[in-house]
Image 1 (cartoon, helix red, strand yellow):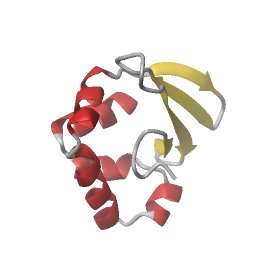
Image 2 (tube, rainbow, N blue to C red):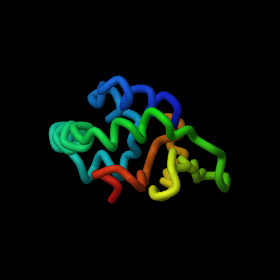
Image 3 (cartoon, helix red, strand yellow):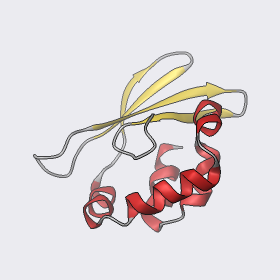
Length: 103
């Protein structure tokens, strides 16, 4: 699921990624606002470059939550930690460190 999210971001297909967000995040961000923030975030050449090289690594997995680590491509950047939550419809992204909508 995280890989699908990354692939869509790499392709610039942000609209398709909204459905991969948790109910909590979708409750805070309308799809319109999400897409606007995403478009601005993806406009940065450094963000697009980093997205090409970050690959998900398993972090801590619990019954209802899981962490995915996305190590940086270079020494100056931080590892992003994305948290997934298990919902009725499956695993959804709930916190996205490194993204403009990480709330």
